Structure formats: C-alpha cells, structure tokens
Image 1 (tube, one colour):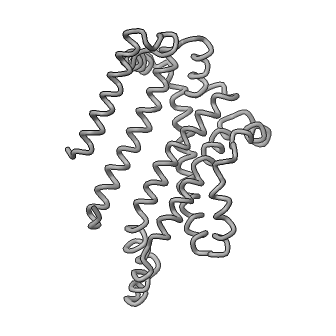
Image 2: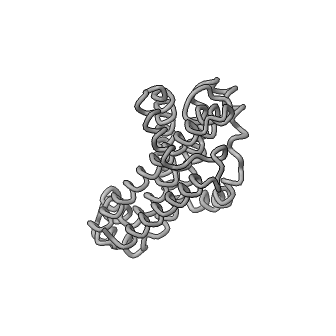
Image 3: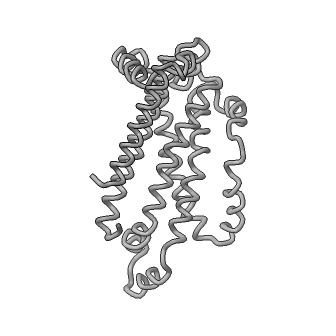
Length: 250
C-alpha cells in the first residue's frame, strides 16, 4: 500500500472518529446529527429490512441512465467540437459559464413536457453531468502532442488506429476525470430532483425523514449515497492507474 493511500485512510478514519466523539460527548446535539456508528447500523437495518429496495432501485437506475447518456453524448460532442474550431470558439464561453445556470429551475418545465415520472429527474441528472464530460474531453484532446498525430499520418495509420494508439492514451486521464465528475453530478441532479416533487427515490426518502425528524433514516441514506459514490470513483481511479501503467505512464 502506497504512502498516499495510507495517509488518506488515516485522515478519513481520524475524521470519522473525531465526529463520533463530538456526537457522543454532546458537543454535536443528537437532534442535529447522530454518531457515524449509528448511521452505519441504521443503514444495515434499512438494507436488511428491504423496505428501501424500491427507492434504491428507482434512484440508482435513474442515475445510471443519466450517467451513461452524459458520457456517450458528452464524449461525442467534445470530439466534434474539438474537430470544428469555429464551433469551439462559439461554445467555449457557454461551457465556461454553464454551471452558473441553476438547472433545477427547469424542473417544472420538464414535468410539463415529460409528465410526473422519472424522465424529468433523469434529464436534470444528464444536464448536470454532460458539461463536465464535454469540458474534460476537450481538455484531453487539447493535450495530445501534434507531432504524434503527424507521425501517425506518416506511418499511414487509419483514423481508428490513431484514436486507439495515440488519442486515447493521452486523453484517457481527462476522460476518466470527466466520468468521475459525471458520477457525482448525476447523483446531485437525480437526488436533488427527488427532493422537489418526486414521490419515490432516495432523495424523497431523505426529505421525508428530515421533515419527520427521523435522523437515523436520513443520515443512513446520506451515508449510503456517500459510500456508493466513493466506491465507484475509487474503483475508476484504480482502473485508471492500471491502464496508465500499462501504457507507460506513471
């Protein structure tokens, strides 16, 4: 295990223990927050009881759809924008200010267009995530040394071979960053939408628990979301490191 990984684990465990102590001695009132150990126990009971299965499936499936759509559309759009400099000059200012627009204000309009179902929150999750993928795709393509592309042409490499052997190795770190950001933004968009008008999903259950002073359920579900996102992003990070090492990058 590398030193950086050990430091991360120590910092994370230390932070959890510190919060646990603050909750146990009463510095953080129980009305405000329950100890992390009780969050973990509460999450175990929720998952074991099966009463949250429907909400978990609803939210995770919506996140998966918005994530896959944002990765496919964002990567494709990024490649096309990069290939057309005039379009790039037009769109760059829009991408730079994209996240200053509160996407949630369009939720009522999406309900009118698509109905009171899962589609509006999937669309919001997609809109939050796709810009991150586009921006990081452009950043990755900008980092490819032009001399390598010229070398590929000299050796008569096909566009597909150039993409696999030259473009992807150099753009991969930025593409992975885009995907990791898209995961977080998809969860934000979907769960945030479930807070507003949805009648099911993790966001709705967290909101319902909050208004009913059910801290155990609320914090248990928040812990579940954190664990899922961290697990997925850490898995992607490990996969990224393996791929980079295979291609000679450290």
